[in-house]
Picture 1 (cartoon, rainbow, N blue to C red):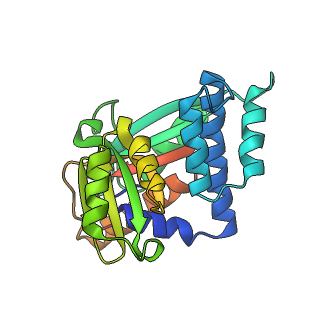
Picture 2 (picture 1 turned 120 degrees about the vertical axis):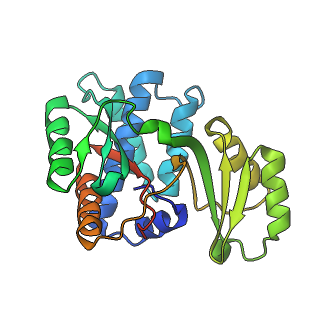
Length: 244
């Protein structure tokens, strides 16, 4: 789930149970399979695959899982996944984007529509909320992993490597890039000895919606929870501010 605090999302990932980690592994495995079918299984040739392998490693996906996903995609009987994006509104007009990878369009559409209807939202037409988000690359470094890092030096290095923006709080540093520059900036920082907690493409809301009604908050949490738990759902983006 992507909301307004990337580091909070990473903390949530780190705290997941083994079963939930398995879901993360499965979702990244699907991304790898789709990428391999589109561009081949050699990461030296398929740049997107190379980036996905790094993403998998950032999420502690075992090497065996990565290799198995690549081999599976290259097999003649591999599952054909279709990437479909759904857009809609949660309670009180919260904008929601749901990225899926599915082998059954009807099943996935039915599930997603059911979640929206049940928890006070509604699906909309393609493009109804995506214009409210900007596609960016987000790199997160944790202070605890970079104890000797000088903030000014890190910011200068990031900007020189092509970053757009830099922010920090007491726990982390967050670097924003154009999506096309994400991995170049990450690689430049790694080469300088910085430890990266996460480097991923994200959709950043242009503005946020605050929920104050308890029922709306409960329903929004349930909507996000059910979407996240669905095996066909890869990513969920929203502009709900009070999501921590």
